[in-house]
Length: 255
Image (cartoon, rainbow, N blue to C red):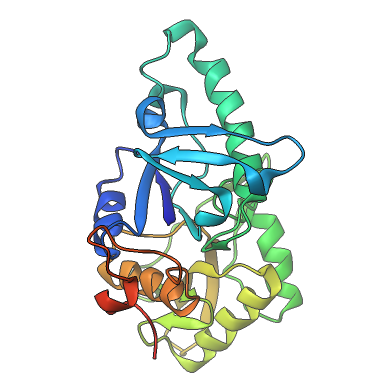
């Protein structure tokens, strides 16, 4: 089963789950933990831990993939907790879920970092330094008290373009120079999913303006690429569909 970790405000998360073959994915949010997510963690053996997700009991090994569309949970999502306790409960759940995601031995679209469920969570100066080391042109930025301050741009002379790469496969058709940059960034960060923003100038050059690892699942093309990512990695091999058919009968396996 592929876990899609999100929140109830992101309507596209439920759409992504529905686009997987029946029963192959489950939506996990902080707002439905109390009914949909129950588990018993083995302190010395995470692999033997048992989970009940949306009423289906499984072992840790049965979770074959993870997509995180949020960086962390927020106190407001725990509406079923007393208001005075929500901040504390949220902090504890963020800490626990970071551990949980790290321990899962499965294919992850955007593996967690210490500060985020969904990968990089880098300050701009961190990825700027990496980009410079890779000889990737970076669009000029200005910092004030350590915080990035956007520059006013002339919309008549530049174009901001969004490009996404998933496990070496670009979504759409980025220019050759951008594709080269995307592959270099993916290798450097070891992150299967990267979304970037480049500034295209009239002279045909592309300058990196931002880099993210939280997937934009509002895009149908990106949702399709995410499903293909898990398809290529055979995360459905041991799954039996709700009607008793194997998932290859639903047409989800690569040739």
